[in-house]
Image (cartoon, rainbow, N blue to C red; front, side):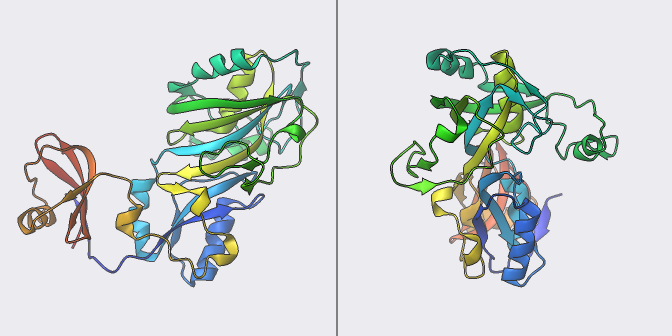
Length: 318
């Protein structure tokens, strides 16, 4: 049976620019205080050493979080070669090092294409993955290690933007239109570097569940080197761009998007009959395939899955 929700005026879905060193939970707590509500959720965790787009759902909009968790995401990633860490990022400490010979940008660019498409990826030990009721990060902090099975992830594209002698030399300012290095634009703060290591700057577009820390590890391994993620900025989640994200200090007055506008699915405009059938849990005949939103007079009616013959309700609004 479809889940049924009484329609009330939508509360906002807000894209926030998460600062460095805050956890995603820290941001949620600050949003709860700013918006004077306990009902705030987010659609995908960002590590404390990462910055950029964190999508928050406030009050009634928490109902749409389930439909946004699978949104694709874009990143800028600084991958330092020649030093590995247990956390796979700049939290450290450095656990292994290796000398890095001359890096060929063309060869590295070709190597990155091997990491696109459907991939098997082993999550970091310092992650929230659960095995046998134990969180991987809790076991890792206690000095242990879990056997984390590889998971299917999708990496849509990886583009090498540059190779630098040190992470300190890599660009920090980018054009928000295409996220290429620029003289003016948005400037990002990276974690304190663990040393002076050759660094790749990569623009990535990935599917849900992909760990950029694991990608950094695996790219290094393919080059025969330890590696870690020296910096990470999430520039897009679904239809939310970092260029349009709200700063933390402006959370209280942020308007955000409505439930309908926040959902990144094709739209079917219903008539009264189709809307009624969907609200009754029926399966109207339609040719659409895949997930869609259904509207009536500009208001959200349902989220549905189509098989080319019928629409099946996933969630419906009265």
